[in-house]
Image (cartoon, rainbow over all chains, first blue to last red; front, side, top):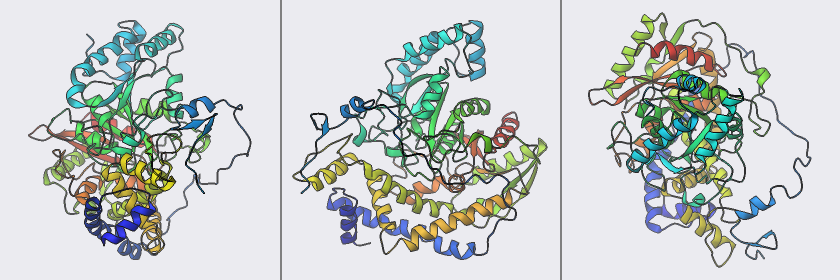
Length: 98
Length: 471
């Protein structure tokens, strides 16, 4: 893999990295991608595989819940605010976006 | 001084019940060992300051007759489990000072039962590793041989029990992170069925693979701790309702061995020899050992190193320096993100996030991620079919013996391969256990790995207990 590609990935993943580390990652990626590329060969072998018997206990289903408030107003506010890096008047403070 | 070396949960429970010693005395015995050994082993990242208060609560439960098997049992938890008011850092700089704002569901359950949390243990950063060497806070040493790694990623949790610094402990397992370290330190480690133990309040790595489970010195200890946390939780959408969980069934007493998978290159000959001896012992104990054909299972690790980095890259997007955790300032929002994440994440975590980002990118998504999902489904089917013939499938737990520090850090593939035999259980979501199966000339442990169908942990415990007697 080329260094330029790793640079693009680092931008997408929002991680600041040195060129030196990106060169190393570019080098590491080739054997990793070659190894995981085996799935193509596995896909060919996978064709036609089906279950011999339907499992008795089929427990997969979608999980939903009512869109309702389950806690009291302000119940967790204090605890959560304590973990924030920067706050003002009980609000999370972030850099200007526009 | 209480003899901790052969202590089990049931023995401790009986002694606490009979008043031979108090919870405080038991806890103090563990604290002494930790004080003596943790400096060298580095199993614990932190011993909680309220341990003795927790012991008092447990003592009250005994007085009131409200005790359970877990009451007063001193245990260690992995640094990725949320215990309100205490730091949970996932052994990463990005969460170094993050204090949990709520209890994980399994912590709540254990608190209700009066278990005593001794402290949180060192791990590979965000559970990414097989040796605990990627922790931002130093290596954990294998208590059986301090020149070697304890395995990973739950290396601190396994070392805590192996050095007798906790009676039992909890780890998390995404590709082998409970079973491989159990194998490296001569303990029992269980990865339960996906969906049995709640993950609410566990710091996520790969959400379709992660599962929490116990470490213990015996199969029975692992079983007791598993039973204590094995419950439906409405806060985890992947949790399985109690009414559809299977009841124990009679065993066929038939165990399958995937011979061609074992002969994959790289498995150490002495491990294969020990494995054959284990098969013979199980045959002597009345189990029929048969060869089973699982042509796809060897691709599990390749599937894993696509699905897991993909899930990692999206799960770890939440660490952005805005709401909690490390915050590095920059001239704009973009710089806050890149600087925080650049400084907060270690090398292996960065490598895997980038790998996941690549795998999920537009041009490669089909070739990698979609293909891996299809193969994963086929592997699950292949295993389900084989489980119609046999109760369980056995292999060694790891193809390699506990290695030395630094030995595999420069070669990611060789590090990843140490999870070759443990990964299929995560890919299929089935339960698996690793059980000590003897030692080599240098005193390093061998381990037997047993897989069972979904929700059939009972099979692992039955075979495990039978096997344990023969070692």
